[in-house]
Length: 165
Image (cartoon, rainbow, N blue to C red; front, side, top):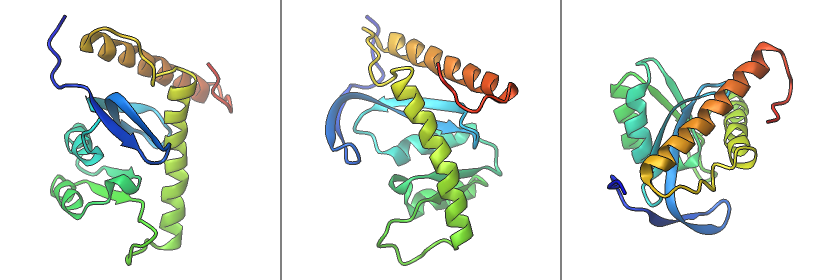
């Protein structure tokens, strides 16, 4: 067995109200839902740490949309230094609000991104990858993401409305 770069760990998913053991996948997608880059970390690693590493894969003028888990002034400043803009959904108790049109645009794009992750989870079963080594996990995840991106490209090029595997 190959040595693993980090250990699996426990973490909580508040939106699903569950605790899980294993790894977490951080991903960068295009606005159309194609996965551009991903990173595998231990489950207890903060999402913002995953974004710091993945942001290096992006062009300087990129706009990064994130959910409420990415709200962080230090992270926003660091990304701004790299020439990138972080637009994270504001928490309900936030004093600063986005203009309504920007809020709606962020929400619409985030919905497409969340659909990508739902399709990966439900149709390609990425939450349950039975591999014995970290390399096996990485390879299986890579092939599932490649299959998803190919299906998405095929659906877009043939004007198919729904993506079913």
